[in-house]
Length: 400
Image (cartoon, rainbow, N blue to C red; front, side, top):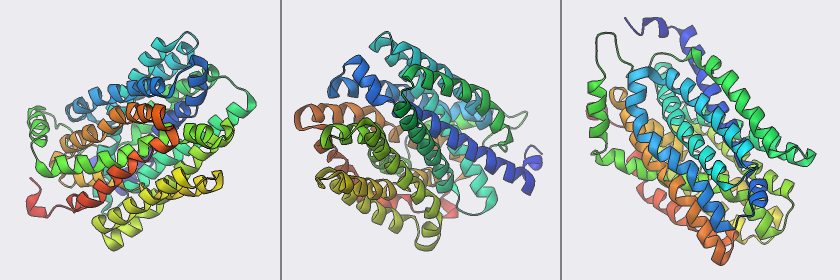
């Protein structure tokens, strides 16, 4: 009876708290790094195109780890996977914090490790979120992703405060790395057993076969493309909002980081209140409307002509894209028997946005400016509107 001890209401609530902690922690770690992007760029004297290539290291690490994450989670469980990847991310932040004093190469190495840890951590915590969601019997996945956004807001605001106080990049990232290593392995001990966790006496081979099969499932691939569109919009906002405000609107560094925090706060609010909309109107209708709203907000951010309007656009941009990624994860986990493999495939496709996004925006930014380069995001948001029907919940007889 491998799951009997984890099916009680007390154990499930402990799983909910631990899952929130995992999402918050990874968001805080990511935004702590992202809030230092302008400072690292200036220290290393990088052009927009060069910065895009440096940021590509995170995506490269993630894209390598994501396809491996499904079989790894199936073999050792989501809890151990998060614990291990938290240590990888902690080391990576220390490497970036110390390495940027020496040049570009150690930063690229650190960011690659950071992306590798973030990618597998992301799959594992989403698998755990899907397990908890099923056992609760109600939608909660967007709120777990709101936890990620809460972590990013905290990381961005603390980063803005530290920049304002003159605290250096090295101190900031090393301290965050130590906190991640010390706290995360402890707080995720409350994870419940995964639906796909191996039962004693059973081997991991069935999950490995399903992981390969998931790459041949049309619905899984389309959900991955849907997630890619939202991931591109989200990743572009994470990487370039502060730089676009600083370069495109002539704001100070602190104002640029506060614009980034505003974008994240709007995304957080959308994820927190989104489950009610999903329960009332369904995944497809809500995602279509919100993708369109995000595109309008992006255009206001780019063409508003004044920082106040850009901030308003950032609110609509962030809120509108808030549900795409978590809904895609829930769609991938509709069938508990194949949740780990399908979430791994969907996340792998989605993270291609982080692989191509930074250099694309950086390249366009060299020619038309970072601010106007952001209009490329609107194309993928339009694609998300067109294919939103793919996230419709699976009928019970199709869960195989």
